Image 1 (cartoon, rainbow, N blue to C red):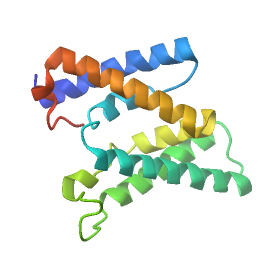
Image 2 (spheres, rainbow, N blue to C red):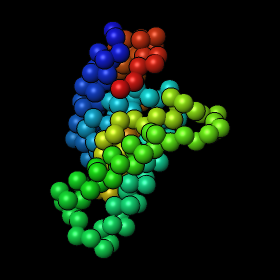
Image 3 (cartoon, one colour):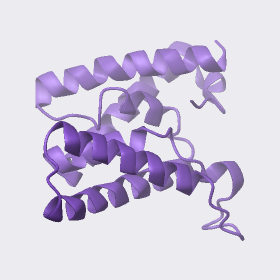
Image 4 (tube, helix red, strand yellow):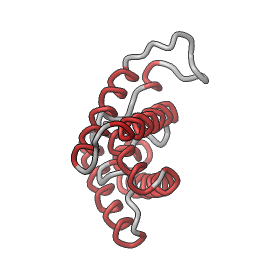
Length: 160
């Protein structure tokens, strides 16, 4: 199975797992497509850390903005995705000089441009701990399904 096919399968499995988490446990895994994307990066800590840092920063910025702007419902969702997009685009172009914690180059990419904003939306809706717990568990389940379906060699270097 080639790279793009694995991404499609990962997103599809992630959607199913996200739906099951929502129905069974009543918690969202950071957005419907997020576990599928995150599962592809579980073997690379750099993008995971950077994406979560951008999501937390996005969450903080929208919380502060919400204290003096009228942002509820669709406005809040749009603002969160926009801030996450802007921060993600900025963070993906950072040149941090010497390796940070032994990570550099492709290890410091962000997982998609929309993913941090989607995670931040769920940080706001259901809390950081619940979102991180469900996202982690759902992503691991998706990764395990992918490993069983395509094998570990097919997943090496597979990313969105």
